[in-house]
Image 1: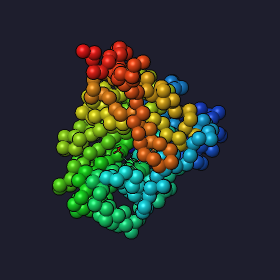
Image 2: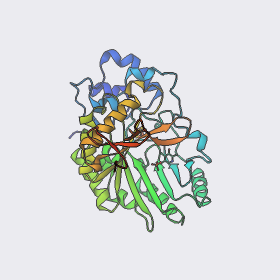
Image 3: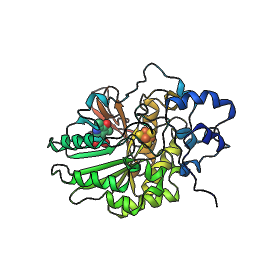
Image 4: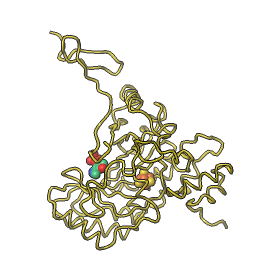
Length: 350
Ligand SMILES: *Cc1c(COP(=O)(O)O)cnc(C)c1O
Ligand code: SF4
């Protein structure tokens, strides 16, 4: 009997799996020395080795272009450090905080905005740091929502997650616990009944936000994992990153949004690519993102519309950067554009 397939973590693993051409091996050693690699069996199985632009490979298989850092890129592109009052907490907005329990992920995305922070060697929060982080939340009554992120919180054991959830449930002013994760899609077998039960606590609303960038990621195993979460009474949302060559055309983006909605997952955010080091080859322009949003708005169900957001470099938070349908005519009257591009005065002329 063959051993269960393993997550590919080294260049030699990728080589053996036929995912990197021999002539790139030497230069990829430099990429591997800087950034973590992990391709789960579920994601590996989706890669078409015959397609040099395979959208799954582009997300997870290292590329020599990652060595090209452009001047605007930064190690901390969204300014987490500027808003971290204690280890593990990022408190940028008044009513919600990020709680980063681990820096480990199931897969390492080549475009990751925290790529300088995540990886198998990064230290998890120690028990004392976790106490301090929970103490910070307890001491700030304005914190209505806690977002578990990382790293990926769903790589933790059900027992550890349960422990954190129960401790959060004792903080009266926290009403919502949101879990951001790539696991339901990248490693669906981890979504066991025990793990799902760990996410539900008395008196709090739990939401799970799954990260997916291409419809092909929503395999039957991923769909079943999401259904286990949703059937347990936990609503799911999604976030996607706009990525050149992966999902930056209207059909591909729409197919992703439809696949999510078909799984009862409401598309939440489409992120503009962050200025993480060595990711220029995967970024598009904001104008391109706006064009794509216009197509989605005009041709697809309202359920399929994410909000297109930019995380402003320097720690200023996220802002919607989708197209505007309002303008003014020569006389200064408000005009609103319909989904076919027609312009209408508002209020209409009497
Ligand atoms: C993205 C983010 C959040 C969550 O923002 P929403 O717009 O509520 O999804 C919260 N805190 C920080 C620091 C963030 O970067
Ligand atoms: S799962 Fe999220 S945090 Fe982890 S590497 Fe991918 S984008 Fe980064």
